[in-house]
Image 1 (cartoon, rainbow, N blue to C red):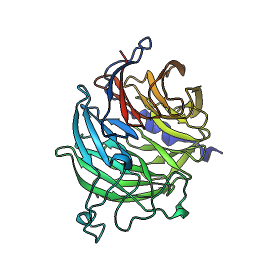
Image 2: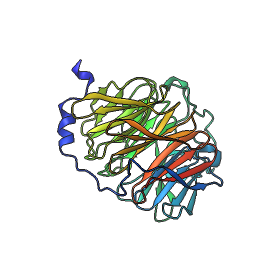
Image 3: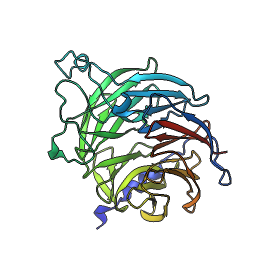
Length: 359
């Protein structure tokens, strides 16, 4: 039985973890206040704070772009088309320009790059676009992760991964970039030094959320089509499991990495797990179809978007109590917390970004 749980290596890893620097502190008594609505040619599936002054939005095949905003002024700074010459990167004989469909993003720890996953590719030879009901046997086209150089905001590298890649995360030590391949049932591990995929790890039905420990030793991957979190040892790529419950989607860790919080999409709950004792903690209902979540830099508060309820919930982590639930927008799908400003950004699938203050 113990082989299905996180063992001593997890506790050993936790002991070496440093707590990251904190930004604005979220008061439990404060109310979320809408301070900005961003419109325009966007259809964001997700948003991501860089932590150093910008927020990116990933606009799928509906807008074929990544948009980048100033985190303080909310000004649109860059629009990065998802068009790319696969031939110039050695992946196609066709001289055609191919399009992607940006779904999720993550910034490199050194701040130089933005990595973006593409749900599918469009162009010659790509005729089996994946969708949300699939398996490896479906034979859907593989896709790419793009690397956007922040000095120019141009795509300067691409990586062939699995079918329908979704969540992408960089390790804090800048050694690896991990990608959850929804239809391949795998996670691709990209080596930053080697500039290629060096490991492909089988996960199970519909891998999605990824969180990585501060010491870069462990990666937590949600198996959304199952009931467990896969814990990948990034030193030897062995895997253990946490039995979190049915339909886990998104994952965040507390700043000190002693707790894990997971959205449970079907039940509309957020579950907690104590990573020191390896025991389940409290869970809380936030709304219908709890999708994405973000945590404040002080670890006191989570922000959860409830897709079918059209709401966002503010949850106190100490007792897993919902402090506030507000109407956000039609189909809120992504959320990020910007540490320097203390603001929460919400991606609205129907074509908006909502920004809320928390102080």
